[in-house]
Length: 328
Image 1 (spheres, one colour):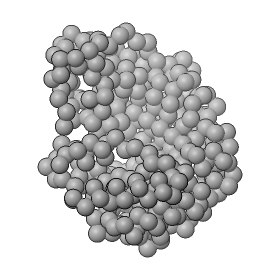
Image 2 (tube, helix red, strand yellow):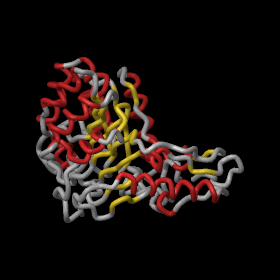
Image 3 (cartoon, rainbow, N blue to C red):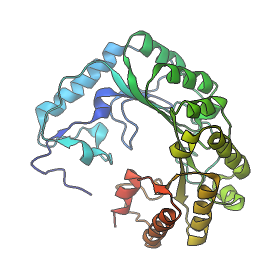
Image 4 (spheres, rainbow, N blue to C red):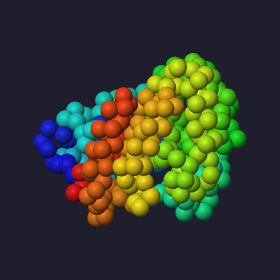
């Protein structure tokens, strides 16, 4: 995929290792890519967190990276699609015990049953621990930077019992926009307020422009509800138009044709969406896998991009999908 042995790229200078916390559904780790990064608390169930331990574990691995050189990639980070963007000829500098990026994904429960979802086979999809007390502790101990960015996903984050309070806390403490990955099946008054404050970025995998196709992919009959919720956000705040991205994941033998793509683009434009994105099934056609995407995907993606541009829509890049498509 890329050459790890270029002489000018010797150190994995990755921000996730230095400053990220990922609250996953069964552990607390440093990364939200397709590699775990540092795992601080495997099988976490809510016990008190020792932030000095977390900080020292980061420093230990980074010291190993700095001392090893020669393009040393820790086992925890191998196969990550972000590696090539984080290779540097400079050693990793000293850093403070400060968090600048949060990934909140402690809930695998969902209100859809997408046929491409990697978590459909997860047997334990309920909540093993709460994130809200942890965020409060980070704030109280001045470890969470007020300039940190936060990403909230799942499962489906909006059905978490702590979602509304958690989003309100992040809105009051952080200065940056908060990115929410959601099905948009459940309407949220706090999300609407976040758009009014111009503090929210939302990504919704709609995958279709009509109810029949939506139901075939999502396995729930909620297309009209999602569209109505999106319109509610858009009508409430102009920032929603600029900060909602609708995603189209190509699904074999369901929406893998130009007609379905056209309906999706037309719907996006008609309801006032400004940004769209196209993806492939990252589970079926995974990175570092021998299974290549069908050849017609390349023409479909070209059609998607051209039709979206003709419709006045902005195309949002998908780095992981771009790497998958390079695996010809």
